[in-house]
Length: 386
Image (cartoon, rainbow, N blue to C red):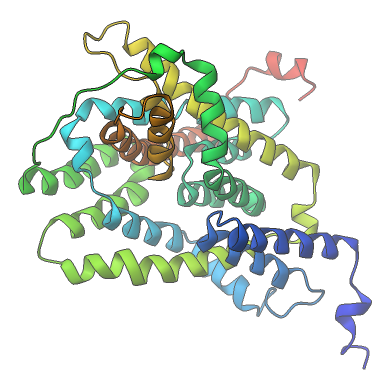
């Protein structure tokens, strides 16, 4: 009888708080439609993991099995990238190659947040994982966190996906703060034209080779993203392309979400570090948006045909939400201003940029840790008592 009531007898305040957090995520997914495909399973997984003596987690728990064999070995994040690649149309970017620069410029939030996290006392590995939240790319955040800060996987994942869902609330104030009315009214010429099938096929192969040679650490993520896109564009694997976009994406997302939720146990999640991670994650998204806008403003100093600086904000990886948000701001200012082809191009570039920069920083931080280096001198860290 004692074992029968173990759930009630060992229930404490921490468990109750986690139940509330889990229910809040489920509520946000259902009633606010904030990233429902992920926040709902994450919330439910958090509830399952916080029952005292829960059979869902632990040595023989199914969620722990999925964690060890789906996330810690990086299977789920890389499979998700196959699905994302199959969904993405790089045509708008290939018609406007210059937009690729915005996809990299908008990753400045990763660097800024990485340094800020180190200032706040996180070690180099943890700082790198927290900074990747700024990639606005959930699978990349999970991939890096698994390698560099496995104990923080839960809060990092929740921060990444929560703020991705809140892009329509985060980006507009930052964009309006950093641009003038006249800048927001800039119109950009329409650039049409088809991209040849050969170009579409060569592009994912070329990106994989270049990224793999420059930053081998990102080969798995970039490679799987581009493999999915090659399956889409080759024209002879339509059934596989549709399966990747639908069945594979849905199944892996479901398992990924509930498994991440299982890491959100009270002892790991209810800590001061979690609050810092959530704050830093928000800062990362703000820095990313600001970095893209500022880069566009600097580029306009040298360009004959001016770029609407708001396009730079779409360089984050939250595709296609950010592209739509920036277009909406443009139409609020001028109903006839259509910059969507450019925002989509920058947004697609952000997907490539976030994965590439994430892999590059992963390799950089791994090397620094192995050789006993840090991103900040001891003299600077000593000022903050670190």
